Length: 273
Picture 1 (tube, helix red, strand yellow):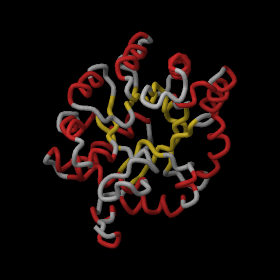
Picture 2 (cartoon, helix red, strand yellow):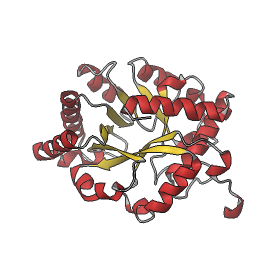
Picture 3 (cartoon, helix red, strand yellow):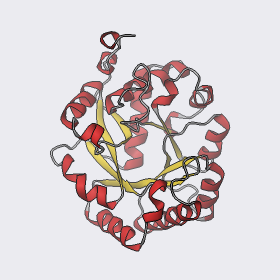
């Protein structure tokens, strides 16, 4: 399919109520083109985008990018890749930001990544637990990153009493059984654009079973672009293609997917409107 023949997200004519719950707009791939990116999101029907700041320094350095838009809310935390650098000073800086900025709606993305192992596993566990304690003390939702570490992630969360607390499992990519384990703890699942990939049968089976009141959408942009833009730079507007794919898998109208996942996201992040 040539570039000029690729469908555009605005071609779905979705109302401007959608939510992309997980984006990295402050990374250079998108920050250099932010105004165009946000306008494209608006045209595609997105009312809100959750920008994930990867640590206190990124938040302090880049939050001013969003001064002139009310469309973007914030998620702040230390990714497991950076766990080795998480110390009391870092935790204190995050805590201060949570205290003074009402635009920060969740602590994340935090968790474990045993696929890349870019920080020692013991440090990942320590950073994860420390940030969970902080989230509990501030009564703020958490956004979880877990890759090749589901059992350990679940163990820590349950040992720390996070069952039925507000928790979003970011970039869910497993099958119905894993979905049921997570949903059984009272949490919600975020579906990325990888659901559009033809061979992603497990995730496609899972989205047929997940209640819409427990599902949200995300791009994780600039990564993980959905079809028909796989391999290209991802952006919030492409959330529309994820909604379309889910609608086809569930044999439901795309408008219903768009409306219900947005309602779930607004409730979870306590967004106005």
